[in-house]
Length: 206
Image 1 (cartoon, rainbow, N blue to C red):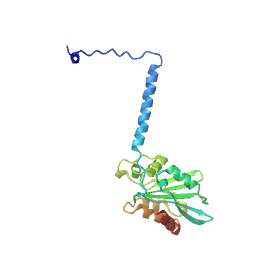
Image 2: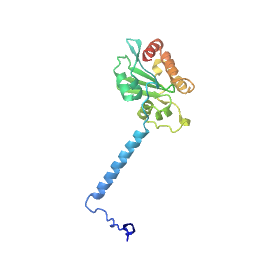
Image 3: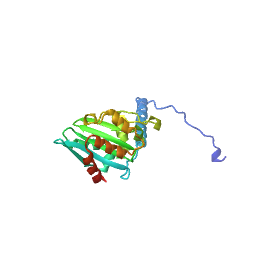
Image 4: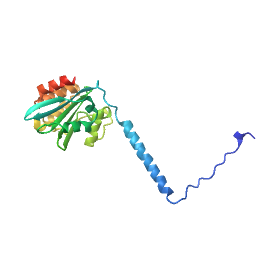
C-alpha cells in the first residue's frame, strides 16, 4: 500500500494536567491579545507629515508685554509632546501659543502655561491623516471620527478668548472648510495682535 493511503492517526488531546498550566495558557492568550492591540494601534496611526505638507509651525508669546513670534522646526508638526516641551521653554509672560497648519486643510493651536496645557484642532476627522491632529484628539480623549459627516473642531474653543479671540469666532474659522488653513492661522495671529510678528516668522519658516 502507498504511503499516501496510510490512515491518519492522532493521539487524543488530553491537555496538560500539570498544576498551573491552565493559568499559564490564559496568561499567554492575554499577552497575545495585548500585542495584537498594540499592533492595531500602530497600524491605525497616520504617517508623519513631510516638509511639503507642513505649512507652518510658529510660536507666539509676549515678553515684557511685547509680542514675539518664532518659526519652529518642521518636526514639531508631527509630535504634540515635543511641541509642548518646546513651548514650555519660551520666556513668555503668560505662557506660549503654538500654531500649526498642515496641508492647507487643518490647523492646531496649543497653549502652554506652566503645567497647564490647552489644545485645539480645527477638524477632528484629520486625526486619521496627520499625527499631530491624532495626538491632539488623543490628548483630549475624543474618539477619532469615522467619516466626514462627523467632521468639526475639537478642543477648547476659548483657548485664546483672553487674548481677544472669542470662542464663537474660533469656531467659525475652524468650520470655514473652503479657506486655506494657513490663511486662517494668519487671521488668528492678527486677531490676537501678533500680525506683523507672525508675518516675519512665517517668512523665516518658508
